[in-house]
Length: 315
Image (cartoon, rainbow, N blue to C red; front, side):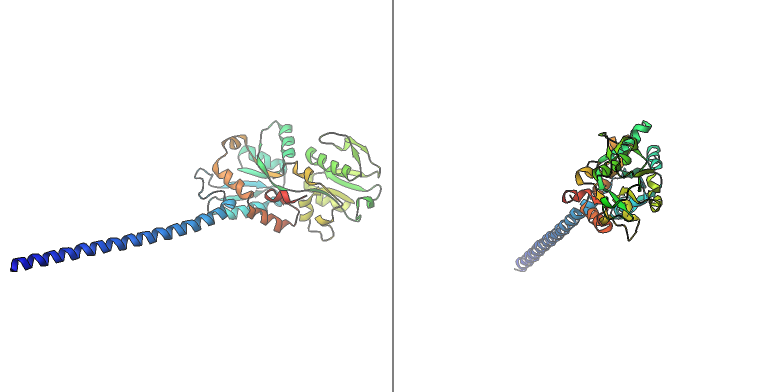
């Protein structure tokens, strides 16, 4: 009898242990499932956040092959753009700007590897630069921002009001001068030969006897007080910070089909880097093509720069 009772007690203990283990297993599964649901929820949030930032950061993870420091050479007018993207990508890449005052020096530094890439020029300018020096710097993908060439003047409020014999400024490099002379011709101030890049020697008619003066683009703003009008990129006029001469007061302005044909200001890299096309370069490029960057440009420059991401809405 005692033996039978003892056996029954043992069976009860075993049954209790089995039940306890089963319940523990259920709790663990329930906790694991809850943890998995939390992870999934967090993952969805991260994916959503990642999708939002992916447009600015170009991907979720950094490219380990990227240089320790990525140096983007530019002019002062492009530095705010570089600094904005550098901040957007600061958790992935160490991007710094290096400001130059000489266009030639920027391209030379890109060729010799002193900087990683540059951001200041359009397709025609680069083509002209390469041809003159027998070099092969590459324009990377599409443009990032566009600027219109515009005509501004000190006193005239319209093209018709520019006085006879007035002095005006155009750039002294082939690509920019050709573009600027075409705008003066479109405005009716002069006529030029039907060539791709007209020069001062290609002016065929000058009814107002204007004195058109070549000037280094870097010296254009400094020389402007000595003349009545100038042709200049909208960003140059914007950065003058002259309350009496605003981009919106332009006497003539390039149309979208003209300024878009230049390809816009974009990245320029060595042929080797263009051929390699590493992920880190793609990431940075995508950040410059993001809606976040587009919003920054529109808010900052008040129409003086047009972001490629929003190009379709401009005329």
